[in-house]
Image (cartoon, rainbow, N blue to C red):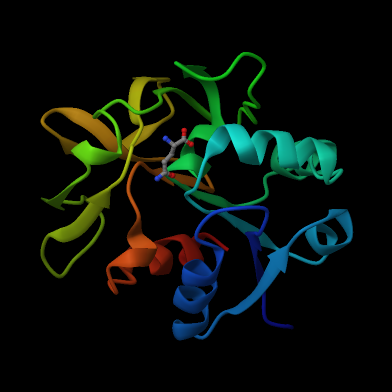
Length: 192
Ligand code: GLN
């Protein structure tokens, strides 16, 4: 069987870091900028960045509808920070008309921990990951405010969910691509 190709949505944000993390794990990674790229991938990472900007770029690149269709067909997806916001069913404190791909049954609050200056780091206990706490970097991070019954919360900060999964869709409020710990990318690849 040919190896799977993992797409990284490459419209804005920390694209290179995710590509590097996937390649370090031996995966084939492809930057996705348009519908023809999306056709070639078996899974997709949606990086952190600015969800309102990526929302607009999804429309102008022609990716929005094909991406909704692929997610509806069960495309495995890993959304980090802004990527988590985009994959959610609903957004609180979003821009009017901001894209909600609805791939995971969560409502997220944007910038829930405050502005850029209130960025922080934390060690998370993650159900599912062996090997000790996961160091996590939060930058204008969202939080899962509500989660449907089929959503598993895998980690929290002060009782607030920051890592969650529903079927093949994994989301986190922080930036796993910045810390050199590849365990979450590895967990995602197990779904593919
Ligand atoms: N607050 C940003 C947003 O709304 C996300 C920040 C990030 O990805 N680090 O998209």
